[in-house]
Amino acid sequence: MIEIDGSVGEGGGQILRTSLALSMCTGQAFTLARIRARRAKPGLMRQHLSCVQAAAAICGAAVEGAELGSGTLVFEPGPVKAGDYAFSVGTAGSCTLVLQTIWPALMLADAPSRLRLSGGTHNPMAPPFHFLERSYAPLLRRLGATSELSLRRLGFYPAGGGEIHVTLHPAGDALQAFDLLERGEPVETYAECLAPALPSAVARRELDALARALALSPEQLRIPVVRQNEGPGNALMATLAHAQVCELFTRFGEKGVSSEQVAQSLVADVRAYAASTAALGPHLADQWALPLALAVWRRGSSAAYTCTELTDHATTNFDVIRRFLPVSFETQAIDKGWRVSVDAR
Image (cartoon, rainbow, N blue to C red; front, side):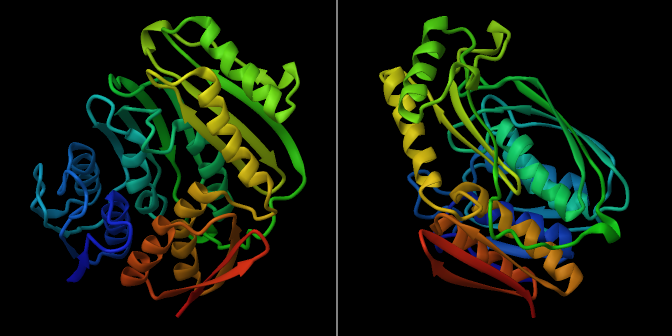
């Protein structure tokens, strides 16, 4: 039984999600204590319980402590079973975080799986659907794990009500780690604004402010057609596609924050990424470590990637991954970024 302290490092829900994912992938049981102990509301919240319940359904796990506010969880996995699953997170809890929790295990399964997930699709505290579609899923396809993602309905905080459909294909013998040291030549840059049930001027003001700051042409600005009953909600997104990687940065509008302030926050994210030549931005770097480590472990190989920033989320994730997998992480500062090397032990 692997014992993990949920208060170490950044001390958030990612420790739980990584533990669940790797427990399913390796068949190793774990106990997670002091869950989110340093948070204002410690213990398991509804979002975290949704991840536990989805993971347990995928592998028939025996679980203790899966209740609201619980500070300790015991998870004993069974064999992962591919199949058709439906998971509802409720209100605006992020269904993308649930998907990321079960994705690694299902990409190692022996057959395709079809998932229907409902809840929040665009949540300030989670990767939005478009990030998974454009940034995360393409990298997993390069590992050998193909997928199809479909956004059926937007779901914003706090109402939720979104829905995504996903088909995950097993990687099998195709699973192969690779180096990601450069982003490659620029392919396309564009910005878009989702603003259902809000005045059309909101989206236009945000995009205009973004265009002025980043010198974007009118052809690089998009306002997708959305159903008004999928709001109210507001997400301003910038997509930077390169030959080797596609990064997507998002900022969310909220009451009391002007369109120009939303745009300037996104401008800061884009400029920070543009100031470096490293392949991955901070959020994608956080999330890339787990699937890459799985490929390194399964192949007994090594791989490396570069990132613009090494966050507490990333280093905490390294520590949890090392508890489950015989891999090592080495970090090296480079010009305006970091190089992370992953090796099988």
